[in-house]
Length: 484
Length: 92
Image 1 (spheres, helix red, strand yellow):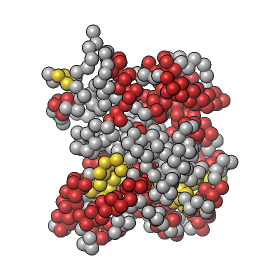
Image 2 (tube, each protein chain N blue to C red; image 1 turned 30 degrees about the vertical axis):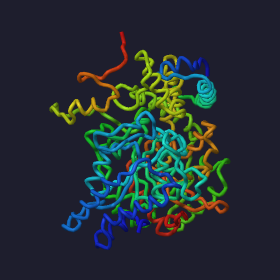
Image 3 (cartoon, rainbow over the protein chains, first blue to last red; image 1 turned 90 degrees about the vertical axis):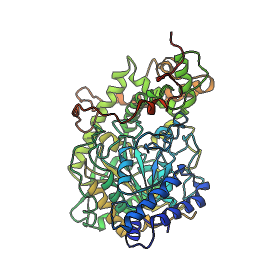
Image 4 (spheres, rainbow over the protein chains, first blue to last red; image 1 turned 120 degrees about the vertical axis):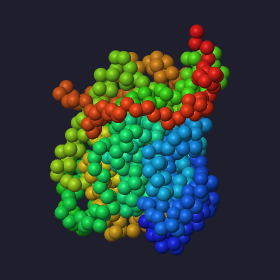
């Protein structure tokens, strides 16, 4: 029962084959069985979840309906949930209990969802492996000696291990798509501005976006329907029409064009990743899509641009953690300055400090033009690349990551190598376009999932999910389960 | 890249770095800054910077008084508070 998708759960609840309480209890039994090995969660919310499940059952009995009524979901631990800890997997927020709901959390709740728990992540979403979490690492359900990806590694692992029906993650440079690829699940980073970030702990405000991690593209559409849309509490949320994303899933792919960016198929890619991605492209061509080659000439500058801009924004956003108003405070300080520096020294992990330092440097007097302004200009070039490519195709297809899930400990000692593993996902954030990851095969030698990335035009998530859904109708990669 | 001074940047960032960590981070950052210096290869003299990818205007709402939280809700989260104020080590 714990293996069901959001859509299957909806149907089973509607036809009263199961109750939400039964489903929620099955999820907690599953968590009890696999969590000691996977460690996807940082806090469980059993008591409130069972309350929400009971209320959902009462509503179902009363003939009420809501988009996610009674469905067990998980939230990445940087999304505020009233009365629950929101730690960002950082010591500095370890004792923080949110006094309010993030807009996405409020929307899930009013859609009837049951919030099972908060999932593990890289500290402040800075990392690609979940190894920078202050709490503990998370392990890949397909191979427990490997990382689940990051930074939404807990959210992806929880879905892959069936410890919830679906989850929310956040994506600043690939943090939904890369863990979705590593864990063999479906993940969507919506267009910048599509989903409110009110109540999302900020990392890089011009790049961050919340999105669903699910077993299927159809489930992604169900959840995006609930969380998308303008929010008066987030001035960067876009005032654009929100379509019913489920309505266009069933349209076939005839007449659509897929673009293959030549810069994404270069040396350095694992041959098994390349094989799986090319086979997936052939499947979509067989479904009627026309293939064209496109060029994104500034791709090789994306990582450098991203680390300038993301770290600059992070250094500003994280200056609020000073031990004064909430969170951790170092208690052995003689002066205010010492309290700040001690609190931040003890409260932040090394990767967070590395990025704060880089961000502070590129914004500092004398270096702003050479680095930060330069980065913003190169961002324009990268955005223009996508606009040009978008004139020639409806979606751009590429790998999500050049490699499948790597071993725990393999890359953590070399920060630049870790950053370079985000090469294929970062550009979508810089350009603000929607992008998703779907399972498209497995490596033959190690049996690890491979992700296909589908990128699209601003606010055209519907076409992405349509392509993904049609691919999933023709393939069974998304229905395979890790043996845990 | 020139002039990267780890101690000055750490002070600006309000981070106290010492010993092995200071050394490690300093080395990492020098490598990373050398890497990001590759942007110098691009001529961007005529390129406008992008700070946000979608146009964002200032958003104003009606000036209505709202009070979602009592001040005690905020103060209860503070590591230290006294007489309805945040308490910090002595400044003067």
